[in-house]
Amino acid sequence: MHEALVLAKEALHSLKLKLSNFNQDVKAFSSYCRLHLRNMIGSGGQLSHTHWIRIQEALEEAFTEKCCLQIMDWSQNWRKQSGEGHNWTTMQFLAKVDLEYSRLVNLNQW
Image (cartoon, rainbow, N blue to C red; front, top):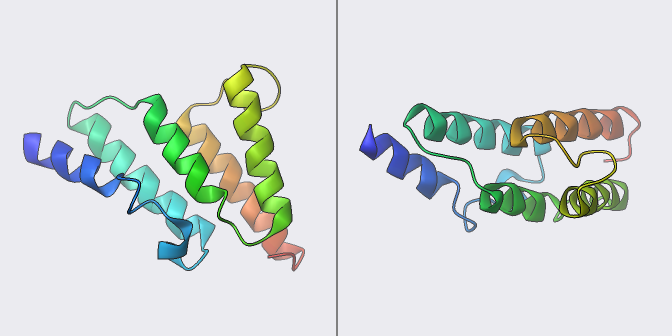
C-alpha cells in the first residue's frame, strides 16, 4: 500500500502534470489525474490544495484562449471561494474540464 501511495504521488508531480505531456489532450490528462488521485486515496493518502493547484496550472497551458480563460476563471473563483467552481472537489473540477473540452472540440474551437 505504501508503494502505491508513493507511485501515485510521483505521478502527480508538477513535472509530470503538464498538458504538453498529453499532446494538449485534456481528456487524456484528466483521466491520468483521476487514476492517480484515486490510487492515492485508495492507498490512504490525502488530496491537498497542492494537487488542485498543479492540475489547474497544467490546464492553463491549453493552447485555446477560451479554455485558458475558463480555467483561469474557475481557478480565481476557487481561490476567492465564490462563484462557479469555488466548492468543487478535484474530481468535479476534472469532470467540468472534460465537458468544456468536449464542447470546444464539438464547436471546432480546439
